[in-house]
Figure 1 (cartoon, rainbow, N blue to C red):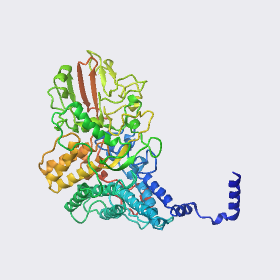
Figure 2: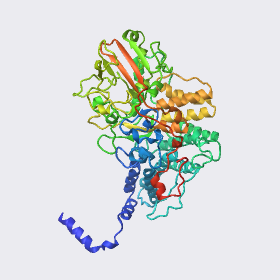
Figure 3: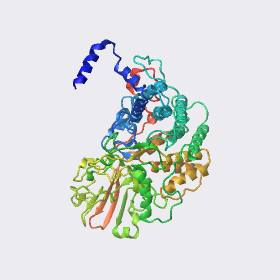
Figure 4: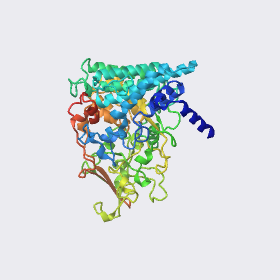
Length: 622
């Protein structure tokens, strides 16, 4: 301490305090004089993908899911922060799209990180190196930076259309009055240029630490961007004459060809060894429950990986329990009867979209005991002769990997909760009682009328299972499982969609069937283009349930107004003596009101940004 004080005194005496470098200048000089500090600065760029570091601002598994803006889920704690699906999205009413909750789509956060990347790219060539390995590291860092910038811009393009293109650091006091939004085509080309730079500089997986960008990650981003750019939304479907949101040259067919070719390059192994984990053969007919659950567990385990990633995952985030950005999927999404928060409840319509185990459609009205489209009833004798009268019986494997329903097996209960290890999101009726008699009903522990933290109970009758780890006690522990931002199934289904749109039905259906077979479902037949298009759209809905891709899909297909509806709850009544069960979709009670506004196909440029730069043209109809 004495030596340190003497050094400080000597320093303060020798250096004029009015002639010191600024802190930012000193930091920049230091960072780009040492390759290891430059690598650490790149780590900051990674860490700020999706906004400021921390559980609300990161890319990946979040407390409030983007899926809750769609027909997939309902965020029970902050439904008002989803103005996109409530018809009141506006430049000064952005909800989660203007906060750190959806930082990966937040205009300010994306540009803050683009600024970081531009600072790195502007200085990295001057970073001194002493060995060939350091020089190779410098080139790799550059490739990673190009990938991060392309990723940030890809989210801006898919949310806002054409945006401001920046490839140089910004200066304090810089005049921004002349900056304008680039066209959609210019923005796409800028992103593709960065992706090609990244591919040329990055190694394939195995040649770099897990979690860093690879050739495969950059190539997967290329497929994603080109698929979006081939879709109806940006090909004359909305404001055809507006170059900010629609292409003005070329053809949609050419863009589908580019998307197909990029996906085919990936599938051919040009960027690394990737594939679906699990069998892609046609599954056995008449599978047993054990066989169904084998497929279900294989699918569920994609999201539970804690070590080296399997071939399914192209790029993502590996969370740790005790350090770095953390996530608490079990706490955020788990049932309240486990002292969890029960957020992001699956909606009844998508629960019905999961198929039966034999690949046929689930048909609510099929059983003779169904009285109408909202009610099913079955006695014990009925269920004994036809177990599939229970709507949760005999369903496809991904249903059991994705949704917790009344009666679903789950974890051992906490010691202070007296209930079995199955979900109780329904109500128990006394023997001889009636489901309309409140005095005869006992609410399950996982309902909003249950005895354990009822405010966290489901509003739809379901909880999301996907992303949750059965070995983690959400009440006490952080999760450490993986968020797969890019996985091989997305490449296959992008290829399938592009092939089908181009009329190559056999190629498209063959790729789609790989995804289905891995999920334990039989092949789809080659059919008409219109029906094949619906096949691939259905497969994306189920395969990517809860992962956020649905928000982009219903926009680019321009079907948001067709699928967004008010949210209602399913009430399950189980007679305590086992004599009867009743499933009732309570369409007379609205859990969350939804309204679609056509302007919301694009996000508006935030009010604050246009206050700073009024020359920025606003998106249509805002």
